[in-house]
Length: 63
Image 1 (tube, helix red, strand yellow):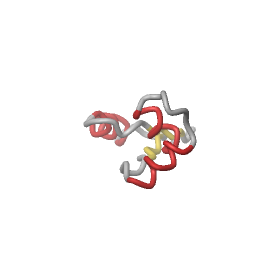
Image 2 (cartoon, rainbow, N blue to C red; image 1 turned 120 degrees about the vertical axis):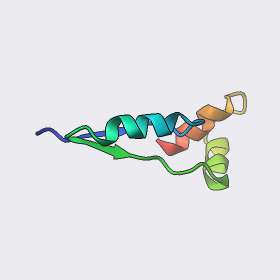
Image 3 (cartoon, rainbow, N blue to C red; image 1 turned 60 degrees about the vertical axis):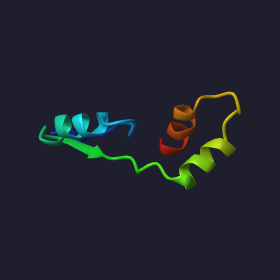
Image 4 (cartoon, helix red, strand yellow; image 1 turned 30 degrees about the horizontal axis):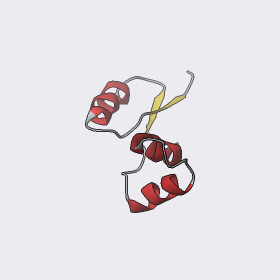
């Protein structure tokens, strides 16, 4: 059986749906991203241009 790792963004409440969708499927490992905190936000602000939207800055660090 092929083991597949699946991850998804933690934006809004959609992560609950995706976690439930992939949790019971055989051969799939769900990797949950960490909760957004000030350390993630400050790292995203430091490593992205100032004109880029906030979700991009968060996703840049989480993945």
